[in-house]
Amino acid sequence: MGYILVETKDLSAWDHYGQEVCGFMKHPDFSDEEKLSLKIDHEPFRFMVQNGPEEKFILAGLDLGDASALNDAKKIFDELNINYQQLSADDLFTRQITDGISFNDPAGNLIELYHGRLNDETKFSSPKGISGFVTKDLGFGHVVYAALNIEETHDFYINVLGFGDSDIMNLQMSPNPEDPKMKLYFMHCDNKRHHTVAIMQSPTPPSGLVHTMVEVKTIDEVGEALDRAINNDIHISSSLGRHVNDKMVSFYMQTPGGFDLEFGYDGDQPDWSKHQTTSSPAPSYWGHVFTPPPEK
Image (cartoon, rainbow, N blue to C red):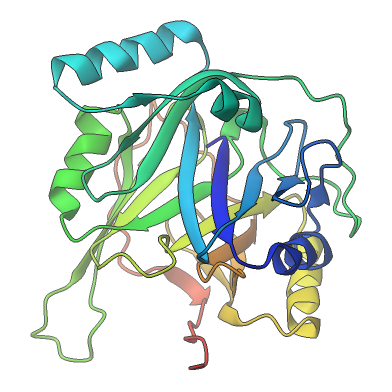
């Protein structure tokens, strides 16, 4: 997972949220009156927020590593008659990448595949003293999409994009045991992060995304972020807890875009040569009590 793009009507709200709550760094060279670039590591940015008419998630960018892998993806798409668009020169510059394409998955989520992220000489320095985020070969985190056509979407990620299943859940979300269970697929790519993309069987929310995730290096930095969120009147979507599948200790908070940000620590890094797909019986060992946002 290389980056995400978000649209907002209030760039200042994201500026405050990103820096004062999350501890991200506003990149001075890639931020202006029309966009905000939030840096969390050695790369130019991982979050780009652009001015627009709506509050919503736009897309996620996946790093394929090199030109050969991108060309292979194009060939597969051509063979399967999957529509894609070449990113323009302006898009490449804005994202600070060498080459890339965009397309929609079967659930309608816009995705970019790219290679060649440009070097950034600006060193990451958190305005809130965060020692660092867990990224590098793991990518910056993960995204969770909603998909009513979950089997078709899952098949696309596994058999077209080449993801693997990390964990599969079937959760009873309704108090009525006769109601159907909700299915969730957690999928990994060619790195050791437990899941880079997950999909859940539900309608796409108005924000365009269920949640995204960042991981810090200490449990104290999770707790301090929780304090900052509470002190800044950010809605806490889920209390602190530890997940069953990726072992992450985290809480969830609402972003200005309406989707959630999971802020975590201690995520599992499986050895995929030995890992067998799990079927977690519950989302969490403890905690993670979810609370919907107040009605406006």
